Image (cartoon, rainbow, N blue to C red; front, top):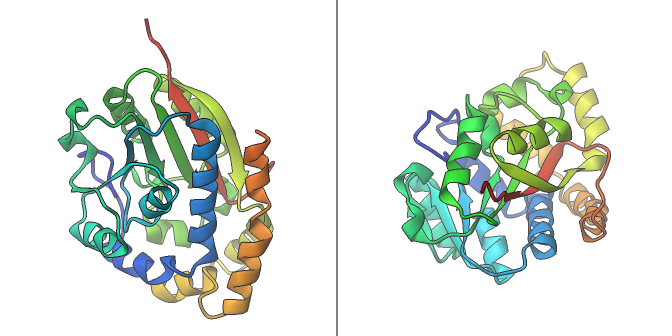
Length: 257
């Protein structure tokens, strides 16, 4: 889950523990839906898409199922193996820095990756150097530093972002932002209350992930997924949500001539 040769902070069992919840989690399913909706709204061609730091291939498979030609790039062998088991057709076990333009990808995605890096600007710069002018970059990150908690530390997050901060990050490295929104809007207040009021209560990582992804309450998992589907409508009308627990941005590499 690293976009370059930089050190990435990610739990050693990260791919394994997330693989156990991704299939049924409302969170992963909705994030996939939002990414696919953004791609279908803003991408006009089906040129090769690089899912950088693709983890276990959850996003790559969702895009692939939507008809997108995807190359998943992932440095951890466990993630690549899990992606292959899921049916992701094209994978690369390595970092972005191991590739050159001969791979031919035109568009790229960094889905919940840059918050794990000490230097997020370097990650965006790496992508800028690999894609052609007019190439598109899709990014998701956790939102609002006010939600930062022990859970973020455990997951290896350095920071959370506002829409403004995410836009500035992309623009500082030569991208023009076409669209930016918060999502997971109904989770913002519960997360704020839970993470602040119960900050001192320790919960082992896997148990916490099961709780936050409603793995022990299937009825709640289904209900949250249904409630969140309305957020895709905002992408379709090119409007943004004012708050949420995650950010989604779509940017294009500017002509520097």
